[in-house]
Amino acid sequence: MPKPRKVCVVVTARPSYSRIKTALSAIKDHPDLELQLVIAASALLGRYGNVIEQIESDGFEIAARVYMVLEGENPTSMAKTTGMGITELSTTFLNLQPDIVVTIADRYETIATTIAGAYMNIPVAHIQGGEVTGSIDDKVRHANTKLADIHLVASEEARDRVIRLGEESDRVFNTGCPSIDLAAEVQRNPDQNFDPMKKYSGVGETQNLANGYVVVMQHPVTNEHKQSRSHVEATLKAVRDVDLPILWFWPNVDAGSDGTSAGIRSFREQNKAENFHFFKNMAPNDFLQLLDSTKCLIGNSSVGIRECAFLGVPVVNIGTRQSGRQRGENVIDVDYDPGSIKKAIEDQIAHSKYDVDPIYGDGSAGSQIASILAKSELRTTKRLTY
Figure (spheres, rainbow, N blue to C red):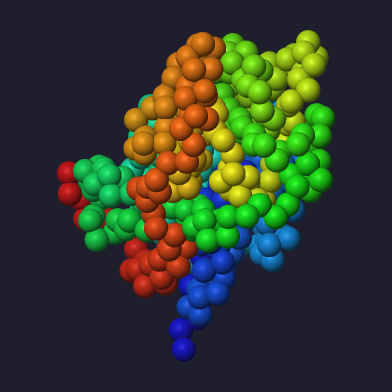
């Protein structure tokens, strides 16, 4: 019997885990695959939510830990982190000898995974290529696409774009997004079965969620990082008048996150903020369960575009971070203007739930990805189709 293919999946950040969790389970359980799970970058750092603890509690064995984040939260530190990542991941791949490497989405750390794999002649599979957001992430995402050998995209629009980039059509698969698998699980069991403040603590006064709440998740925009503080201050000004508990999640480790964090801390110091509660992170299923019951999601996270479309959650999407990304009817787009943000929040709360929109998958991505990784021809050469 042939040996199982060694599939090395590199998780580098908090959102990446939810984007790959069901695929990890499917790879782990597949008889023809061996999972090599590498945890790297901010996924190892407690200040961004102890993602590694969640991963271990979910029963995954970690093959390697790669420390590669340079402090600074600015474009220079992002570039240097990427360089450190190439160095450290190359050593990791040399030690693990994987048959295929899997990289996820478009964060700056992901390009380190792809470059290391490509230069070491290891076939690379890229999840969530072919999308457009109008920021530096587009360059990283498309560069990952050109360096990758197997493409596991989340929508038909994304598949068409990857093929137009010159990739072979029989190597581009629309599996949907694995995070939609989790959303489908939540949809099948919608009753919230945990108290987020008891389970995850966080910072702020205990909130009574019985009459509803809103969730805020706002990250800095890397090519607008100098405005990150003013951007979050506009959102804070808009949501402070919402007469509901506000559950706010800390930003990702990107250029400008120090400005976003400073704006939040200053607001807490200068205002009573009695209806605010702040969290670093939650387990993916818990977070989606929380979202499924919210009156509205506010901010600029891709979860508003992806999972919330499937769950029908009303979303107020602020600014340019998700510009160009395909979206459902559940999203209202606004600029960094407190009045516009406030009006959109009021409209979305009044609207309540939207219809389910499966533009990013039907809930079967994880098993599809494992099957493709088990059956696809492993090669690093391409038939150029420019």
